[in-house]
Length: 141
Image (tube, rainbow, N blue to C red; front, side):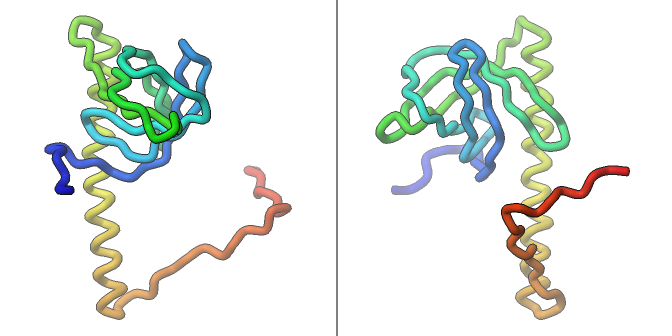
């Protein structure tokens, strides 16, 4: 089935918290219009809910989302973001989110450039070794 969305979705795993329901989850993809959040408990379709989304480097932002659809076996929910234009703080959060999404496309371009250099044998694809489970995290001095 061809993709019907007009706005690109990006695979991304960010922490999400729904304060009204005391539910934690993680995004599996995000777009300007919304996101899919995997959760361990059932949610109800058709509700507008507040959510806190933790963005790398930026921090936690507050958004509103309409629960558009539920995942298979209630494994998550597809949310459509609701930009509340008359509440300045919520519009400002949405604007920050919009700016963040623009950087994702730039990061994808950088990743594509990196992979092109690997395919041209100009760079070696680097990977991290598997970290032992009992490894200590270095402390900041």
